[in-house]
Each structure stands twice: as C-alpha cells, then as structure tokens.
Image 1 (cartoon, rainbow over the protein chains, first blue to last red):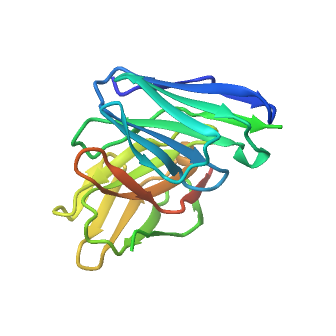
Image 2 (image 1 turned 45 degrees about the vertical axis):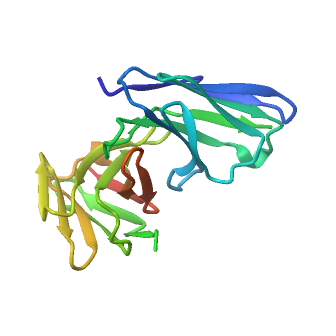
Length: 112
Length: 113
C-alpha cells in the first residue's frame, strides 16, 4: 500500500480564519513533506520532517505552521492567509534512506 | 546548479504516436531521476524512475533514456493514448535520509483521439 491521504479535499477560508490541513500515511515512512503547487507550476517544497522533527523550512511565512504529532500524521496549520496563498497543497512521504516520494491527492485551498 | 530544465512546455501527439519529453540537469550530485504524472486536481503519481548507473529503463509503454555524460534524460511514451493526457514532471533527487526533489517545470501532454 503506497497511499498518502489528505483531508480535506477542498477548503475555502477567509483571511482571518484558522484552519488545518491533515496528512496521513501508514507505510512506516519517517520522512514527510509539505509542498505548495500553483496552477501549471511544479510542486514547491515548503517543509520536510524527518523522524517527526522539522528538518527543512524553505523560508515559508509564519502564517503556515507545520506539526508532526506522530510518525503517521502531518498537519499544516493555517492562519491569516492571503489570497495569493490559494493553491494545491500536497503532502508526500518517503521511507528513510529511500529515493521515492509518494504524494497524496492534495488539498485545494482557496483564500477569499 | 540545482535547476532541472524540461522541454517542451506542451506537446500534442496523435493517438498511437510516440511522446518524448526531455530533461537536462547540471548538478552531478543528483542520484535518482523520477518522472511524475499529474492529472488536473490530483497529486503527482510516480510513473517511472532511473538511477544514473543505468542507461535505459522500460516499464510497459514508458521508457526512460539516460545519458550521464550529457546530463540528460528523457521520457518516451510509446503508443500514446488519450488517457495519457496529463502534465509530466521530471525530477532529480539529492539527499541520503530524506530526499529533496528538484522538479522540471512540467510538460502538458495532449493525446488527440
């Protein structure tokens, strides 16, 4: 099973709202990733967690706050977002030491 | 040096034809080269991948050709079908524990019936 699940599939939020995106995998992967993808562009790396610790933060604004509460779960907390933050947010995971990243279906976020 | 250059940006192929997408890189530290297929509104799905010690890899209708000396690799889709219409991203990987992918800009493939 190479499934990464993400919820919700779609999210519409105002600029003053607080919301969270959730990502889950049960493949024993100890590396998990958040990407942002704008239309007709490649995925852009935001954060990397390795063994539940933040390893990479690609200079992402503080209105995005990641959290990895356990080895299967990755959250992205959103607060005071801007309309330009509207995008497809992708989660991925990989086995430690492995090359392959498996992507989830994404959450389509619209900020009004 | 982290860039992966992908061409063409878009491609239209007749059903049954061969689709070819090319990528080039500079960083010799890249050690794994996957191709992802993405349908609208969906996440990228790993299609096929190759390591630099192999010159060609074939899986069904999909083949990667790899030229290490030229730092180029390409995806060939044989007998292209309308269901292959999607965006294709090449990528290159670095890292030992977690992996870091550098993506090409993508190619939108349309296979006409």
